[in-house]
Length: 156
Image (cartoon, rainbow, N blue to C red; front, top):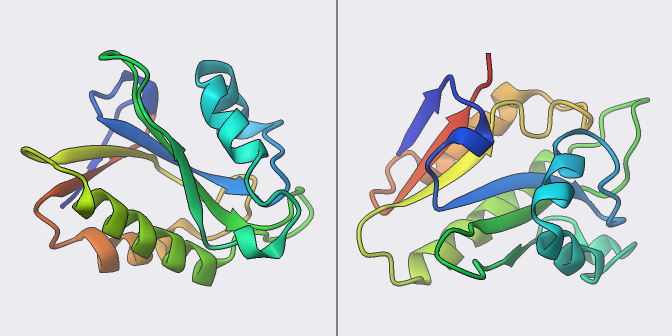
């Protein structure tokens, strides 16, 4: 299931958040910078996972909730390098990462539906990609999935 809502990602009532990261473990701008500030454990996990190793591309890592008010944070490596001079988002890498993430979530003991917040424009901001292509990848993997609901958060 996929729903697009005009809400800020951090104001949504999701079980977890997902965002795109680069293969260098640099979270210095955009949403990654805000995620680092709000969820420093997630940054630590990512910064210790295959840093500067091309094998990281197309994978995800995560930090589990530390308490009842915490969230799952999923760091999807959809770009190896970073910058603002060209497109860095790799659609093939995102496809593999979301396929793996879906498998991971389905193996969890989900009682009802796991709601995963995703920022509208994932991969298209600093990653330079086309969100319509990212959305088609998300639709392919999650459109008919009844146990996982993607809440794409579009802050107006």
